[in-house]
Length: 381
Image 1: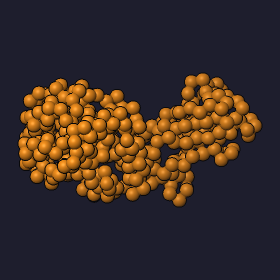
Image 2: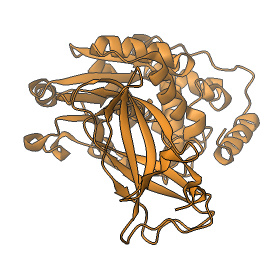
Image 3: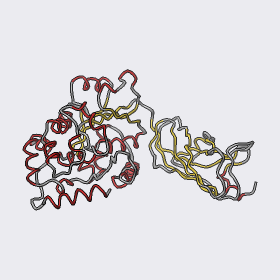
Image 4: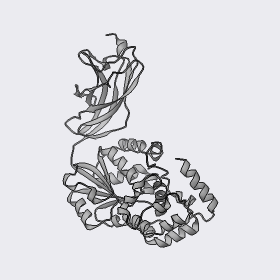
């Protein structure tokens, strides 16, 4: 076979850097030869790999094979392959070298430097359970995305404790739930050795986020099993409408906003301030990992932060527009000062216990607030 047959490239698409056990990696393969790379026949072509240690010594030469997509990859084509990778038996830091192999003929790396290196940390597959709790729209999903990326953890998001199959829990996963901190669920979490994490966010920003989110996500009614009502009355409201102000003053809003306060008081719970996570994500994640007694190199954390930056997440087409703004103090552009003071008076104990002030923009008019809201509904920036 001519060396020109092996011309092309391979690379890992996702910045996954921390794994436990075997895993699947999205790989991009490009054929720059003049011939078809066949996935079947006597000499099919497969995605393959080698494992090397930090000093570039070979640890595993002949890794698992993953066939190319059905029909192969034609000349000039680029396709994505879900490569199956078996991790080394021992934990540690390794280099994964991705390549292709034509079975019974040759490794592609022998031609045109056809290879791609990815630095990976392989950890022991131990039981590890995290629970992200508290008020909705406080950064819970953002947090679970970063932690699941760091530790290759499955995520189970439910509305109520009864939705959890407590008799068949995964050994390693993140549970995300908006539930009251009652004695039954606290006992369940403790019995199954969950580490409890609570996000706290400015109540005004939470309320504004709920106002936007309920337009796109009908399941908000399942928060707390529609305790004290739901979000129906504000589906098409603006921040200056009486419907929204009445909602913000309601027992429904009070119950939702109080969830973080309930969990904050539970022993053995770690609390993260949303605004601090936005302004200094690396430091905040390092503090959390110290509390979890986990050691992860800074460059791996930085890669996960970059992959899950709010700016990047806004570009994804989530059906419920989950990542909308995320900017702290957006409420100051949207809540009239008289409304802010009214809402603060109703929930002052929540603001005070979390250390959030009521300092609205005293110059904000209804016309400007409505203009800001209309613009934010259209833009994702």
